Amino acid sequence: MLSSKKTEIIERKFKEALIGTKNAIESCLWYGKGFAIQAECGTNVDREFHSLMGLLITRFNDIQMRIDPTKLDEKLAKHLVGQLKILEAHAQRFWNIQGSSGDQHKEERALKIIEDFKSKLWDFTKSMEAYLKVEQREADK
Image (cartoon, rainbow, N blue to C red; front, side):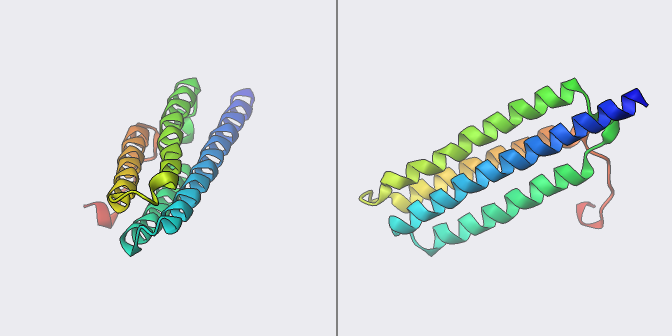
């Protein structure tokens, strides 16, 4: 019974960390999107922001739903915190779009920031695979 309670506490902390980080990253994304609009970066950048938002939500929800409760421990907690810090640091780069209104290459710069974050999001997803329930999906075959 005691270990069950500990698992519940770790699971709650895990989900709170994921949700809190996802919310912080979403804020950065929305600010970055707003800065891109102000800088008149164009529809390509706008489309990429929406695609990235969908990918972020999908990835975080997938991890949250597929976490293997038997693997919830301090090792996972440390791994998660480290990975989330990396994602948040890259999300902060969306603020760099703010100063791009006079930049000739504003669209390229915005797309590069988006692509860099997307790459880190995929790295995060891959790093979490060892802690997730194995699920056979038709789409993955």
